[in-house]
Image (cartoon, rainbow, N blue to C red; front, side, top):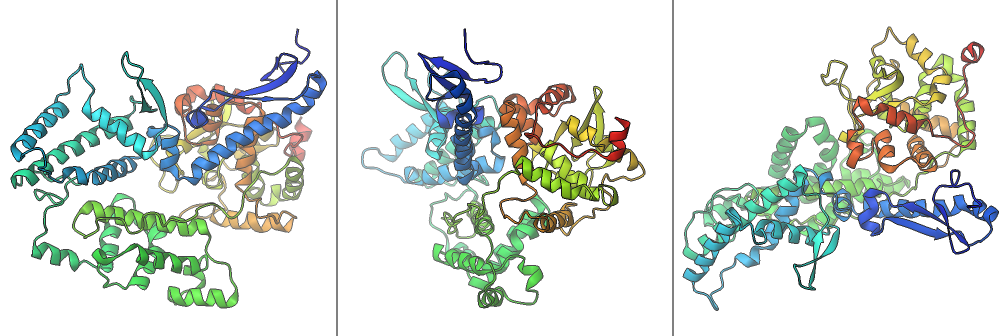
Length: 588
């Protein structure tokens, strides 16, 4: 019989006379860690000492999970999804980029070679390949699937080895869910690419122009991508300038997204591009060294330049910043701009008529690692912070309830600040927050936005929020459309704009000046609390609106609210509890 209460210490077991602790590897890390669970020795045979060491070794395992996720995030969302074997996390544009890059690398295979085969024989082989692609033999390997596997492996997709037939030979195969719409789209694009490949190769062999237009794989229509350009076409490409690129890409981006998003992400970048190279600079002549100069200018700029240096050129603003010793723009911000510049050249390359055959900004995103490692508030820090917030509860309740909700829901500031009174709902007798861009009638609310599709969720209220008097506060707001009517939309339309600035000033004033502690620290703390309560990773992701995986994708459904409610009631912040309003205490 065990000498340790396994109910209180989940994962503890004994091997021989030594105690160990184990924890299952979350599904999103399974293909990176390459094992289903991690086990660590507690280094003792004494049950009492094992209990003492238990939380420290469990924290070591969680630290390993955190490090793996940090490594994935540092690689960017596309590489992170590929390494985790999660093709379903990629957008259609991401998949188009993957297949487009693969297609361009195959250009050398389209160059005709007559060392061993004459043109007629080569054309015959191409016809056979085309037949296999259009109607694969059910008893043989599908050439499209085979090409897709090779593409994914070359791109860095997580893989496992598989035995080939009855032989001892093993081959790597990508770990990918072939039932998803993203995989179906990938297969469709690879089939298009292979057929375009064959059509272009045929034209190169027989001098014809039968290859049809394809915006990804043959944007120049019937002319083979590597056939010689005519003098008039070359001249037209040579006349296309940086000003043309800025104008045309801006139109494309606004049509695909909106003007506000395009201005926010590209306006400063376009200024830097035009100021560095000149508006009349030929796009076809832009080299990697020119993009390095654009990055150097961005690196030298101060933050918030549009507000603090109106009327200045970017070069003048950079000089003033250096002269006054002001801080420079964050490396993560510059990295984001360079990633956007790379997207511009990817677009120009796909168009085929800008003279861009290789992205000159590729690989210049630089380090996007944050300069500050954020952390969660400790229980003692939460007590001190809310002791300072408590006096504001009656006079300016927004300043108390927005942080309180962040602690117990893990919601982002923007998600909380845009709440409406109708977003506090009741499901199966459980009080919840409906974090959604849609109203009760199912129509989209114009001034509400969420960061990702996974952010759309219903979160049950923690008992501590209810006990602290939140529902009474909601009742008092019944005459207001917005739950926090004193918050006004900022310049980008987000209702958290001014609140975030106020909270930053407030927390410094009450003794929390560390840059590692910000409003987002509440979200970090919520995730930590989920781990300490041993809430499953998928359920924690559903509660916090992190990228959903597997069954968590169903948690937006009201029928799953009781499951989430049971999980959220497990959360404990090691002694911290919201202060209860006097009227609530008297009623109790």
